[in-house]
Length: 104
Image 1: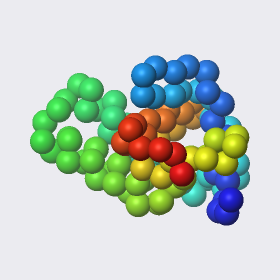
Image 2 (image 1 turned 120 degrees about the horizontal axis):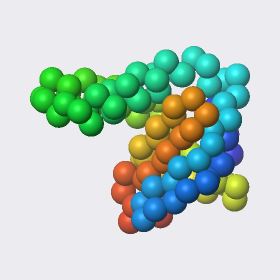
Image 3 (image 1 turned 90 degrees about the vertical axis):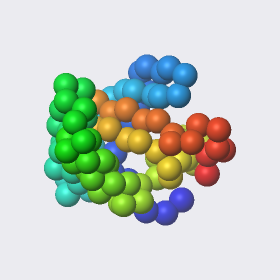
Image 4 (image 1 turned 30 degrees about the vertical axis):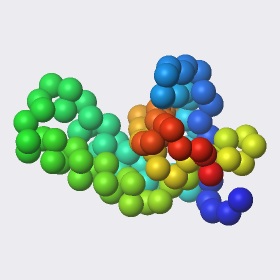
C-alpha cells in the first residue's frame, strides 16, 4: 500500500450501495478540505435547485475531487478508486461509482 493517508472513515451506517460514518482527518487532509467543503455546498444547493447551471457547477466540483485520484482502502488493504466520497466536517459518505466492480 502506498500513498498518503488523508483520514480514517469509521462506518456507522450502511445501505444498499453507500456507507456513512465518522471521518478523522490527518494533517495531510488540510490542503483538500476546501474542495470537500465546496462539494458539500454544491450538493446541498442541487437538492433545492436542479437547474442546468447549478448542476454544471456541482459536476465541476465533483470532477475536481475525482481528479485527485483518491483511493479508499479498507482494513484488509482492498479499496476503491472509482467512488463518490463526501466529507463534511467529521462526517463522511462513500459510494462506489460502479457497485458491481470488485474492489482493488
